[in-house]
Length: 286
Ligand code: PMP
Image 1 (cartoon, rainbow, N blue to C red):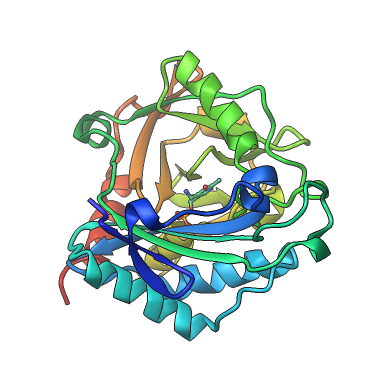
Image 2 (image 1 turned 30 degrees about the vertical axis):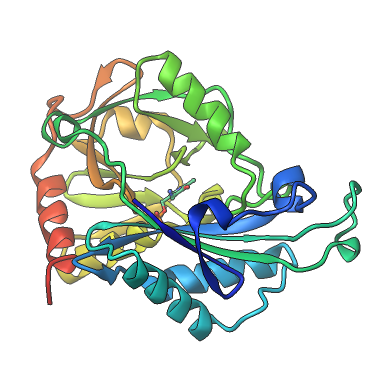
């Protein structure tokens, strides 16, 4: 459990780590965040997450009041202060307190918050038996409205789709884009394996470019597995040999059905297992 939270340069007991009700992060979801894993006391792919955080902030014209290197230090300090060996870091930058209007010029003091805590994982059964997916009727945000590449504090789009998943008895839901193409799931990227080729929607499908997604693409290339980032529709998933999701918390989780239709033989596939093994080697002790 997280006891001390980093907030604006200080490590405070969690009860004292508070933000204003006038903060635009609270009022409007105006801010950015990252979720990061800690394995064996080491923060995994921290530089990559911090880079994406600064890119998200830049996209919403939010100036983070410290350098990326200082941010990396703050994360490491918080993890150490809480004695986290296996856990999760939530890095949040909110716009700061302002008036009740939208004008960002009236806000001040962006809040920099690092929470280091334990992690909630999918149940082990999901990795053994695979996940069932349902397609949400809520489409992924249109890139011209709110780019999914921005990891913003406004997750209502994903939450609404996730509710549809829960209502259908699924742990995750597939989201399509405005063109009806496969984009991603509510908190994970999606991959299929088709005739030995690993395929995933490209960034222009309107997705968050997952750090785990990129790590898996690199692992596959190194292992000599052909890789394609391409446009994909639901049909491609129905006829795929294997399917899996990637995400910081999920790592690699097999998917065995979509909308009640089995994918491949309806069981987690061999290439999915191989990639999960390779991924787990990355997270092992050096
Ligand atoms: N897509 C969405 C919408 C996400 O929120 C996330 C992170 N939970 C991902 C994909 C996976 O990204 P990452 O591998 O960086 O965790």
